Amino acid sequence: MKIAIASGKGGTGKTTVAVNFALALEDVQLFDCDVEEPNCNLFLGFDLEPVEEVTCLVPEINPDWCTLCKNCASFCKYNALAALPNKILSFPSLCHGCGGCRHVCPAESIEEKPRPIGMIEKTSSKNSLTFFRGILDIGEVMATPVIRALQRHIDESRPVILDSPPGTACPALAVMGCADYCVLVTESTPFGFHDFLLALEATRALKVPAGVVLNRDGIGDSRVEDFCRAEGIPILLRIPDERMIARLYSEGIPFIKEMPEWKEKFKNILKTINTVTCKSKGV
Amino acid sequence: MRQLAIISGKGGCGKTTLTAAFSSLSENAVLADCDVDASDLPLILKPQVIKREDCLGLKLASIDPELCNGCGICLEMCRFGAVLENFTINPYSCEGCAVCTVACPENAVSLIPRVSGQVVSSITRFGPMAHAKLGTGEEASGKLVNMVRKKAEELADKYSCKLILIDGPPGTGCPVMAAITGTDLVLVLSEPTVSGLHDLKRAIKLTSHFRIPTVACINKYDINEKKSLEIEAFCKNSGIPLLALLPYADITTEAMMKEETVIEYSVHSGTSGAAEFANIVRNLWSEIETRLLETSQKEMYSKTLKAWEP
Ligand code: SF4
Ligand code: SF4
Ligand code: SF4
Ligand code: SF4
Image (spheres, rainbow over the protein chains, first blue to last red):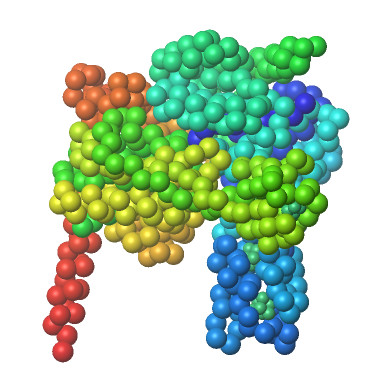
C-alpha cells in the first residue's frame, strides 16, 4: 500500500500529517518526495547516510571530431547547446538529458557523462521507521528524475507514506501517480478549498482514490466538508486549530510525541483507507 | 513605474493575504498574481476578466497510429517514460524533447503545441490585475510568470498606474527569480518555524544575488517568540530592515471567509483585534511606500547626474 500525502499548495500541513502518520504506524516506510524542500527530517531529526547520487546524462563534445554541423544545437529543445562559429557551447544546467543531441550527431562526436543533480539519503538502520529522502541540488530544475530514483528504493511489501511536493505540477503528479491512495491535506477556507479542488482534479486525472485531512479544523466554514459529503470523499481526520499544535510545529516537534492520544486517530486513517480501497476493488 | 514583489520561502504563510491588503491601501497600482500554481488572489479580489490569452508550453509528442508499425524504438529511446506500451503518449510525462520524432523510422511521431496555461487581464475593485491559470501537470514556468508581468506592465501603461504589486510564487526556483528580476523592492515574508529562518536566508540570498533592495516582516511572530528573535537578529546582522511583526490573528481567516481584504474587514468588523492588525499592516505599507519613493528618487538623481556628466 502506497499512500501519498499531497496538497494543492504548500503550507497546509502536508509534512505534519506525513510525519505524524508515519510515527503512529509501526513498521512503515516514510519517503520525503518533496525534493525541493525536504522538510520531514526537521521534525524527525534522524542521522542520515547517503545512498545514491542522482545524475543526469549531459553531452560532452569531442572538438576533434565535431564538424560544426550544428545539428545538435538546433535539435535541443531546452537551449542547452549553442552553436558559435568555432565551437559548440553547452549549458549543462539547462540540459534535460534526453540524449537527442547524441542521436542526431552525424560525426559521433558526442559522448554522455553523468552530472550530479541530487542525492538520495536514508536513516542509518537502527530506527524502527524506515526513512528515505531525495534532495534536489539548489539551482537544479529536474525534480522528477530525483523523485523517480527515490521511488526505486520503496520496499513494495510494506506500507509506505510518501510526502509529495505541493501543487499539481509534474513532480507532484509523479508522486501521486505512483500511489494507491492520496491523502489531500487542506483547510476549510476559500483559499484552502480552491487549492484542494486543484489537487483533487489531479488525483482524478491520475485515477487515484483520494481522502481528506482537514487541518486547522474549526476555522473557516464547512465548504470542504459539504463538498466531500456530496462527492462521497471520505474525511479521514480533523486536526483542530489549536495553538499548541501550531507551537509544536514551529519547534519542529511532531505533535503526536507530546499528544499521544493522537496516535490512535492516525492509525485509524490507515484502517479507513484499507476499507475504502478494498471496497472499490470489489473485495 | 515602481515594482514591488512579495515573496516567501514557503507557501501558505500569508503572502496573498498581505498582497490583497496592500492592494486596498495602495492608490493607483496594478496587481500581478505571479503565484501561478495556486492563484488565490482572485478569490478575494473578484476580478472581472477583460481578456484571456493562451500560453504555449513545451510541445507534446503525438503518434499517428496510421503510420506506426509498433517497432518500439520510441519507447526504448524516450528517457522520460512517456511512451506507453500501446504507443500512445502520457502527456504528464512527456517533456517535448523530440527524440522520438527523430528516432521513429516511420516518421509517425510529431510534436504538437500544448497550451500550458492562460494569462488573464482583469479589473478589480482596487484596479487592474494580471493573473494566470495553469493546466494540471503543467510547470509554473518562469515563462508564464514573465508573461503575467508583461501583461501587468501593459495594464499599468494603459491605466497610467505608478506601481505594480507582485504576489510572488513560493520557493526559490525559476518562477521566483522571474518574479523578482528588475523589481525595485522585495518584501520577504517570514514565519517563526523550524524552517522559517532557513527559508528566509535562501530568499535573501536570491534577492542579494539580483541586487534588489530587500525588506522583511514576520507573520505569526507570537507563535514562537524565540524563533522570531532569531529571525530579528539575523535581519539586523545582515542589514535587512525588519518592517513589521504581525501577530497570529483570526482576522486573516475571518476576512478571507468574507472574501475581503483585512483592511476592508477591519472597517466594519468592529473588533479591536481586527483594527489593531489592520493598523500594523497600514504602518507596514507606509514604510514600504517611503522606501519605494526613496528608490525612485535615487534613480532620478543618478539619471540627472548621468545627464550632467560631460
Ligand atoms: S541531451 Fe537533450 S537536453 Fe541535453 S543537450 Fe542534448 S539535446 Fe539538449
Ligand atoms: S551534431 Fe555533432 S558534429 Fe554537429 S555540431 Fe553537434 S557535436 Fe558537432
Ligand atoms: S518528446 Fe521526448 S519525452 Fe516526449 S515522448 Fe518523445 S522522447 Fe519521450
Ligand atoms: S518508433 Fe515510430 S513506428 Fe516505432 S513504435 Fe514508435 S511511433 Fe511506432
